[in-house]
Image 1 (cartoon, rainbow, N blue to C red):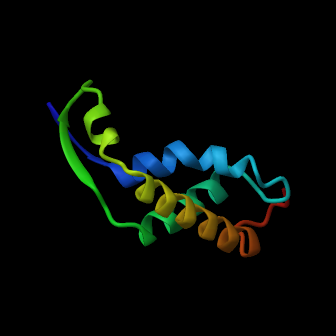
Image 2 (cartoon, one colour; image 1 turned 90 degrees about the vertical axis):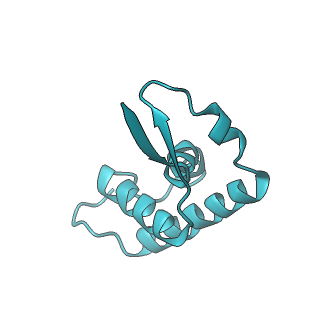
Length: 93
C-alpha cells in the first residue's frame, strides 16, 4: 500500500518541539500547537512524495536542504508569535 506524505509537514513536526523549548512564556496546549502547525504549514510550499507503507523516508528527508530548514523555522517562529498573542482558547496556561 502506498502513502502520500507532505515533507513540509514532516519538517514542521520535527522542528516544532525544539523551537517551542525556547519559549517559556507561551501556552503549549494541544490546541495552540495545532494552530501553530496550521499557520506555519499554510505559509510553506507543499512537498509531497509517495512511498510504500513502512518505507523509511530517508531519501526524501535527505533532499531537505539548509534553506528549507531555515524557511520552516521562520514559518514556525512567525506562527508562534501569532498564536501566542491571539490564542484561540479560554484556558490560561
